[in-house]
Amino acid sequence: MAFIDYYKVMGIPKDTPQKDIRAAYRKRSKQFHPDLHPDDPKAKAKFQMLNEAYEVLNDPDKRAKYDQYGENWKQAEQFGGFGTGGGGNPFEGFSFNMGGEGGMSDFFQSIFGNMGMGGTRRTRTRRQPAEPSEVEAHVSIDVWTALLGGELIVSTTYGKFKLKVAPGTQPGKKVRLKGKGGVKSDGTLKDLIIVFDVTIPANLSDHQKSLIEQARRS
Image (cartoon, rainbow, N blue to C red; front, side, top):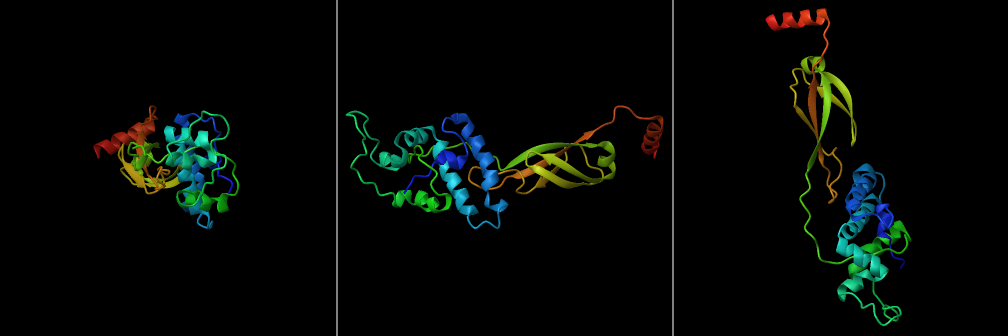
């Protein structure tokens, strides 16, 4: 079968810097996440393929072997790599069975079709720092909305949301939006924490000052 190109799955060129791989994955996962495509029967499989590609390209050692050996990278991993001396093609005359360990790539071939030749992988895993399960976004509200409550539309990196502001909302008040904070590298959704910042008006009219004075004395 034709090998699936992990770079095309990730939507990036082959010379993408290593430091940009994670960001590219996060951007791509927002497009492929099954929750965003409930009517697409292939959505889950596409997202699994994306995670397979990320597992390889996010590890510099796996990526290097992938880039070097192309469609035979899994056999190179199994046999500890092939020597580059002696000239000629080191894989010539050698038949590789891409079942078994290569089963996942075989499976996704029927979904993604021929995506071209690609790079490398190895089985040693690298422990990644724990990812946060939530992200914060600060939203400014005026003092009148904080005092009296109301509704507003807020725009964040993760989309637009309609929120209700409870009367008497204090600066730093937090509201949790479950599953609205993007996607972790393992495919699970993060929560979005909205933090309210109350903006105090700098210039009040005499009438506004009078009303506030009355409220303070009452």
